[in-house]
Every structure is written in C-alpha cells, then in structure tokens.
Image (tube, rainbow, N blue to C red; front, side):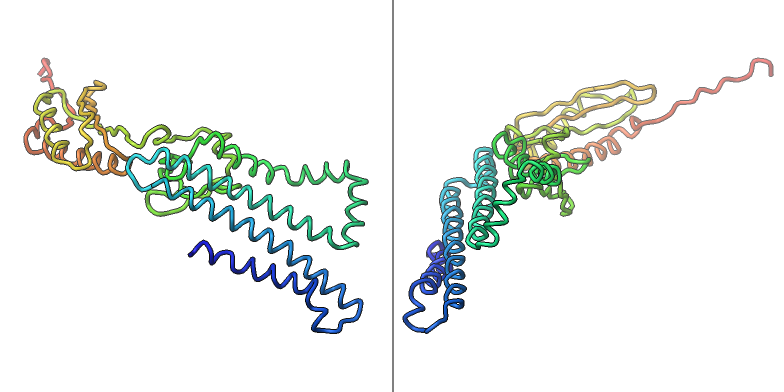
Length: 306
C-alpha cells in the first residue's frame, strides 16, 4: 500500500499535463499565445511526471530487493555488500534521469534549441572549458561509481580514516559520511578511498582481534597472568571463544611488554572487551603482585675512599 501511494503525485501530474495539452480547450476559450504557453506547460509536466514515475519505480524495486537482506544480523557481510551496491546505483540512475529530463525540457523551447545548435558548433572549445571546470565533480561521481563496483568500503564497515575510528554511515555519489565513535560525523570525498590508504577492519568479516598491552617488572610470573586472562575472557559476554593468547612481545631496559590477544564477533564488542581486560589485569597485578609493577632500580655503592 505504501508503494502505491508513491505513485499518486506522478499520476496526478500526468493527468494534469494531459488535461493542459488536450482537454483544456473544451472548457476554456484561449487565444493562440496563451494556448501555446499552456500546451508547453503541459509538455513540461508530462516529462516531469514520467521522470518522477521512473524514479519511484527504481526506489520501490530497490526496497523490495533489499527486504531479502538484513543488515542488522551479526554476519551481515553479504547484506552490506548488496546495500552498498544498490544505494549507489540508485543514486547514479536518479542523477542520470534528472539530467536527461532537464535536457528534454530545455529542448522543448525553440530558443533553447537554437542555442543548443550554436553550442554544438563550438563544442570543442566549450567541451574543453566545461571539462576543466567540472573535473573534480566528475572525478567524484566516477569515484562513487567505482566504489559501488569494487567496494573498498561498504555500509556499516568499521574504518580508520584520518586517525578517526568509526563506521561507514552513508555512501553518496560524491562523498562518504563516517560516523565517529563519539557520534561526530566525518564527511570525506569519495575520491579519498581510492587515492589514499585507510584501514577497513571489516573488509572480509565482522569478527576482529583485540590486543591489550601491559608493562610490568621482570619478576612477574606468567602462568597466573594467563589463568587470570582466561578467567576474565570466560566471564565476559563479548568474547567469542576463539582466541585467547598471552605473550611477552618485548623486553625493554626496565619493563616487560606483555600482550593479551583476544577475539570478538564485532568491533564494538572487541573495544569493550579490550577495555574490560586491561582494567581487570591491572587490578590483578596491583592486588596479587604489587612488587611486579614497573619500577626503576638504582644501585648505590659506598665510596671505598671514605
């Protein structure tokens, strides 16, 4: 029913356009100049109604196709891929339809048609000037089309752009909106994702590894720390029970670098899990092994001459 309502306004405009072109003469006596103006208005409304109806058909068809894909499930890689392609292709088709419709409407007027002929006569110079002026705009539109086909990013992908961590919220023809973790919005040109390197954490799957680094003294025992990490992960609903590793990754002059590696189904869960494990491991060391916290040793020797 909702889809049918979308066709009401295009249908009304279509009926009005036909009335202005063919039916109004039976009700109102118009002079030749007014009749031509009314007829031209009817032709314009006819083009608008057809273009509007085609756009509605595209949107209704897209919504019907996307009903088979749920982007809110945990494993939504295929759904995000389809959503991204369909949304960008919809915008491209609508853009083309609007441009063609404006061109057809302009060509309905004799004065514009004559100007068009003169423009075509000097198409070489005009095309060069317009091409240089619209280079960036056309590049952005082509970048949006390339993103729809190659898909370096998809809707709801987790990315790091300009050192900001967030989700892809919108993909438009000329720009992309990234929803930052603190609810800010980062608007980036489409060409950015084709010209510059960026991190995509959910390119092939939604699950992700999380790391926590702890710095301790050389006297820390490792097995109790591993058992505590296992206990913390098993008590957390964010852990997907796939990865549970504790390793010494570096030995510095005064401290050991200990890395806890864990996995989660999604990046938000991985973030919450990392924060939880880091806090609890520090509390465990403070409580059970306070002497193993990072410290600086100074050796004092007596002066033998005294």
